[in-house]
Length: 260
Image (cartoon, rainbow, N blue to C red; front, top):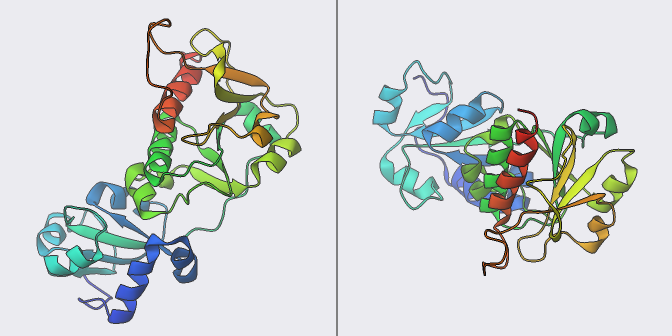
């Protein structure tokens, strides 16, 4: 692999790379970071890559498989300095942030199941949700401004490359919901219609709420169909609620089950 970048990143670049843990740093540099072969391979299909640093072994193994001119072979010690992971990966890449996607309109949502996130804070949950969306064919996600950034390093890693196929738009969620026309807006609540027996549409907007507080009252007023994911058996004691990533996977699977 030919390299158009120095074998060792400069102190300036190292400082920029370190700043990508913070949303301000990502906006200032216009970059986000991804690690590991699978995640990077997926993202290379869609996003412009600025820098790739890898071990010699990785370079030799992937010669001809991953085509890029900006790959630098570096000692493992450099990768340890770049990684956010506990175990040092053989490759770390830095991509350009994409332009912000516009939120989908009423006509799109009416035909295509779309996910909305209300104040989801944990980057691991965000990444898991995006990965679920990719698996379930949900291509558009609308997130409230106070959701975690989808390009947070932990979210990127948890998504395992799903960002290559799932667009995330950040909006004032109550205002966005108020602007929609006649589309079905679903939401998950502790009190609601049993999702396993409910009639569910092919399209529509599914709202998932904050890890500890669920869907806010400002957003809940626009939910036309309240859904419950019941524990089993119904009369048995169970944990208070599901992790939002797990709940999203269950809910999306029920929408897709109605299609088959």
